[in-house]
Length: 293
Ligand code: MN
Image 1 (cartoon, helix red, strand yellow):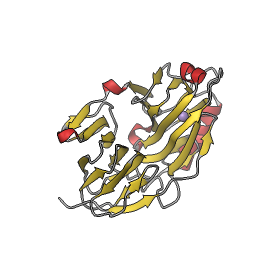
Image 2 (cartoon, protein in one colour):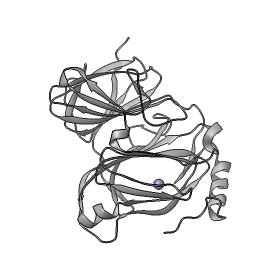
Image 3 (cartoon, helix red, strand yellow):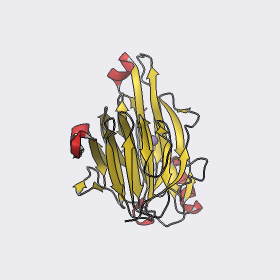
Image 4 (spheres, helix red, strand yellow):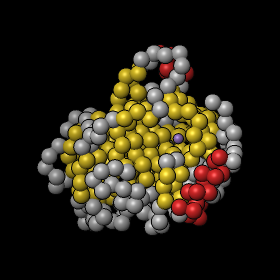
């Protein structure tokens, strides 16, 4: 198999707040040509790097808002988040947990720091990733999958080099926790100091790594790649090896592109402008159900 080379290394972004509870760096879609098509099926990636929130009696977060046409995936590393949606689903995820919400035809939801975490305050670290749906599934029923850390299958790397938590897709035959509509591989990777791991994805998949903490080297690239950087790979070659220069955590993502037009406006991601207009009409006429603030 040919080596998959690096196309681009994206440095840390200026953080901004989403609501009052998520202080994020936006990597997708953003500068550097990392738009929704280039990274399809991954159409948005916001990273809340470790940030201390002081104690409060009124949890911070984002109030009731709609989504249609895709999935929101929240990966918690520090702190915890509570989710409620108009489909009647709710869940709390803490460190190592993942919530995979399929908005599809539409939900209202709200995302807040979990009450006990908010009351004490503390370090908060989280990723929110949006995974697009093909036209055939954009209007299918909403769905919710919640996983705690222990629900996510773990591959222990040989020689105590670290481990790989398979959130979705598969890693060397170990199947991930989440059901997906298209081929999506999503791993939380921990490498010990001097740990190594190999990865292989088809050339046409869009593949990237977010360095959550620590630093890595990748095959032919000579410089260390530090935390808060995203590595984008070329769409040729399949395999690459990562080695860690210290204890390191990574989010590895790879997926088959959905080769369809994208029309996106705020919380709605569809194929055409007419479908966006319909989503806005449906939202304003109560078509997304009911959820109390
Ligand atoms: Mn949301």
